[in-house]
Length: 448
Ligand SMILES: Cc1ncc(COP(=O)(O)O)c(C=O)c1O
View 1 (tube, rainbow, N blue to C red):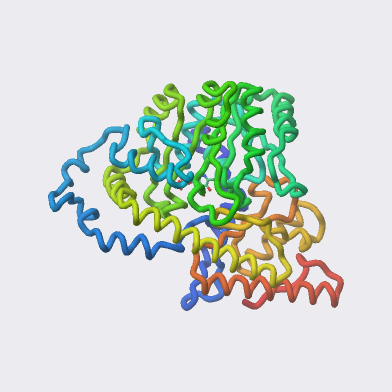
View 2: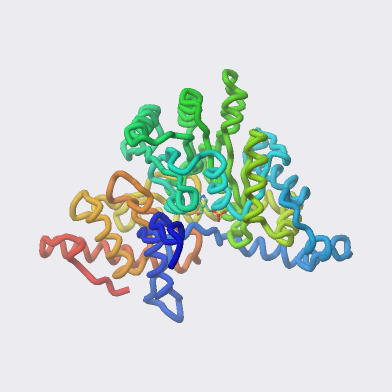
């Protein structure tokens, strides 16, 4: 009944990342209404500073009422359909992006393309830069949504670049070369490397050394770099965030060439905590890419009403910059709560300084060092402990036993419940292992 594209498997919805969400939707936790339900820890949403945003909206009723200086702009907004976007929004967005990067980079609004979220921005970049069957290299572990966003409708392939826990999952030049060789063996033409900086799911920022390896590699192979910097305003600890653009700008040799092949993806879904507004963007110095991406953006524009609201939020510089600072403080505190709670249960996390999740090491809880054992542990945590976390395999991690655990989409009280459940699970698992010598997948049903 459906077209081949519509029924293709590579949407990725069968991955445990999405299966976990489906289980959560069937039985969502609620403190009063459903206290034994599943707690959603697989969603990288930032709700921690929502009250701050709400209070701005309350103080500025005219903006939601589509008025400017008391005069209605309803007609202009309702009729506006220029796919270049509202100039006022683009001006504010580039200033916001610059501020997040410590004002070390100046962005030009003419080189910005507005899209309905970073999801579409990433897909548009694939359509612009690669034919179906050509490939992008992605360091693993990577955001599970990329299997859908980059591959499904475009027909582009992903070649994983496997990073290892032995160096904190850092990108090395030898790993880049290996991934390239693997693509050649598979007869795939590599068009570029796509990184997330800060990384989803690691919660770490890329070092200058990594960024330089990436640039050297892209220069050598004459390919593109796409840097998804959707978490760039959610860096809450040192080292500070360094954008690929900054390092490219500092380089003197082959500068124009690589600058034309470096593109940034951004969105307000994480840093401003408004994923429902679908405000995403591509920034590129490459005029041809900007022109093509602008045309493609007409399939997923940001509504002019949303553009108007967001432009006004960002125009209030004191508010938007204070918001980012406050959000960083709250995210950091939350991350610390999660790390402490897990440590209490004998579980360690990769040291992070950004993002809305931790990369959690549960290798010691596996019955064997295999992805089957990782899946068993994940199922146990989902169905019996009642926590939806994302297994490393859904992020294409090459080592079994790592999990992404989100912490900013719930209340502090809910996080405490989650940590209590985890501790009870570990304690009873250890007790069973000690008493019977049996392993965790055979063991307990935790009473939450
Ligand atoms: C790295 C990364 N890119 C893109 C997206 C999609 O963002 P948006 O809601 O702006 O489409 C996400 C969302 O989790 C993400 O983590």
